Image (spheres, rainbow, N blue to C red):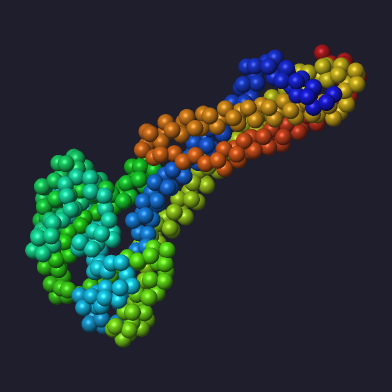
Amino acid sequence: MNFIESFKSAIKSLTGNRARSFLTMLGIIIGITSVITMSAIGKGGQKNITGKLKEGGYGKFTIFIDKGAKNFRWKYLFDDVVIEKLKNTNEFKNVTPYVRDRVYSKIGNNFGRVWFTASTPSVEDIDKVEIIAGRKFLSFEYENAERVALIDDVTAKNLYGSVDNALGKEYNIFKNRKSAGVVYEIVGVYKNPFKGFANALGGLRIPRFIRFPLSTYDRIYNLDNAGFYEEILIEAKNPEKTKYSMVRSKEILENIIGIKDLYEVEALAQGSSSFDNILSTLNIFVTFVAGISLFVGGIGVMNIMLVSVIERTKEIGIRKAIGATNKDILLQFLIESIILTGLGGIIGIIFGFTLGEIVGKVIGIPPLFTLSSIIISLLVSTFIGVVFGVIPAKKAAELNPIEALRAE
């Protein structure tokens, strides 16, 4: 018996009991569907979250003073003169003071921590945000230290019901719990950079953000050190040479101030890279857990094939009596097993695509299907057919023809 005849015989045996064949494939279908869906949603969420974070920080970095250094003195804080000298080197696309910290906010009975960024026109160019309601700061608001603010959309919805409803409302900020509050008028709402992450993890609580003019920060919170800053935000001329620009900025500052080992440089996208690694690990783990169902499905295939061997014992005896070899019997049962798992894999991939699209729309994350995941799923399902089909096929091939013929 050649391969083609074995294949035809296997097809005939499987179609002879379609209900059982489908139920046998069901474990594989569910397993492949789970793997494809979880992998696509995981990779889509990862790209959606970290892609925007990396895009926002690509080619940008901060340089700050290590206040814990032995040679640190308050007089070494950055000022407008130092920043202007950095700009005049023409080695960087943009340079600006950068102030970011946590403050307290309170609206009615809502009281909590919020991340703030003291903004300049240059900050808005370098560390861009997506305005979804209202507007950005106007030039006179920077110049006059107006008490205006931009807040993120998650905070706007939580506190005011909608992003549009937040416009023109008051937002009360406290430097610390004991300080007096400062009221800001909300003139714009921007997209929270961690919103995609929250959607991926089912509405996880995420940080709140606010921006107000740097001149406002100096006038209200930085009275003793107005015009002096601990951190500078820099955008490289060539994003591909960011590391070189980071080294050069440090060298230039050391030459300007005359102090070494006082500055630290950090890429703006560095945090998102670490976050990307965490999400990759989490995605692999979740996909692996979903893949356990494939193992369970393989056991189901083996059990059904063993039952099939018992039911077809007499048939096997007849085939051996008319000349079928152990190899022929082994090949037929292996082909049956591979067809079951292979076809189940194909159906699972189709279902995986469909379910992935549905789940992606429900949770707001575009699924990312990859050719590698499809090929791996097919190979795994076929491999399961071979591995879990060997024992039943070997048992069928080793049946004694005389004893098989006596079976009822």
